[in-house]
Amino acid sequence: MNDTTHIVTVTAENFQQQVLDRSSKQLVLADFWASWCGPCQSLIPVLEKLAQEYAGKFLLAKINSDEQQALAQHFQVRSLPTVKFFKDGAMVDEFMGAQPEPVIREMLDRHIDKESDRVWHQARQLIAAGQEEQGLELLLAAHREDPENSRITIDLAEFYLNRKELDKATEMLATLSAEDRAKPEAAALLIRTRLVADTENAPPEAALEETLQANPRASQALYLLSLHKACAEDYAAAMELLLRLLKQDPGYSDGIAKKTLIDLFALLGNEGELVNTYRRKLASLLH
Image (cartoon, rainbow, N blue to C red; front, side, top):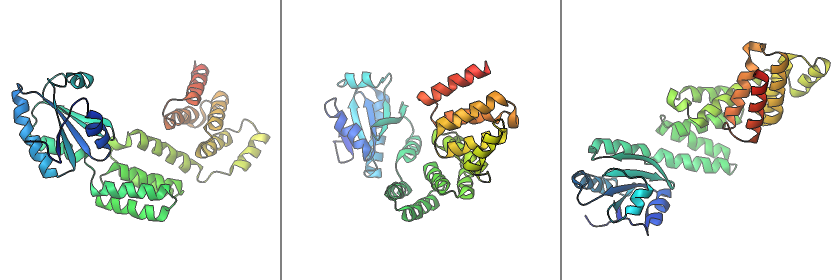
C-alpha cells in the first residue's frame, strides 16, 4: 500500500517531523522492516489495515531498516520486525515479531487517547487557569466516562486534597489498583494525604511553637509541627524538626520520625540537594 494520510514512509531526513513531532498530536507506530524478512511481510498488511481502520488515531511510520541503518542502530533494533510506539516525542512501548492482530489492538487501545482523555486535558487547562469549578465538572465527567483511567482519578484526588476535602481525596485514592498506587504521582499523593490527615485535628503552628518553647523535648509537638511545615511545603524546616525528634526520642510512635523523613524524601522524588543533605544526616544519626 502506498503512503496515505495514515501511513508514511520514514527516513533519517524526515524522522523528526514524521515521528517525533507528529507524536505530540497522535500516537505513532514506527515499523522497522526489511524486504527479505518474512514475518515483516506478514505484519505489514495487518498494520496497514489497522491504520486505515483507526482512521487517524495513530500514524503508521514504515522504516526500511536496510535503507535506514542509522535509525535502526540508533533505536537498537536487533530483530525484525520491530515496532516502536511514540507519544509526546518519546518511545512508550514496543513489540518484536509478527504479533497477532488482537495483541496489537490491545496495545493500540492502551496508548490512544480516548474521549475521556480529551476532557481530562481540557479540565487540567481550566484548573490551571483558575477556573476550578468548571475544571472539576469536567474531571468528574471524565471519571464517570472512564473510571479505570488512573490519571483522571489521581487528578481528582489531588484537586480534593488541595481544597482540604480529605474524605473525597481518600475515597478517590482507594479506588486505585495496587499497581496504580505504586506510580510515583500516586505514591506522592498518598504521602501528602497522610500528612494532611495527621494534621487535621492538630493544634495550630503557633500553639505548637509555644509548647516547644516551654518544653523543647515535647515529642508530639515536634512531630505535629513538622507535619504542618511539610503541608506548607517548607520541607527543610519539616526535615530539621523530624531529625531533631529522631535524635531525642527515636522510639516515638514506633519510629514515625524516621518513616516520615523517608516519606518526604519520596515526596520530593528521592533526589535533589535537600534530600541528599538530610539523607546523609539521617544515615549519620542512625550509624
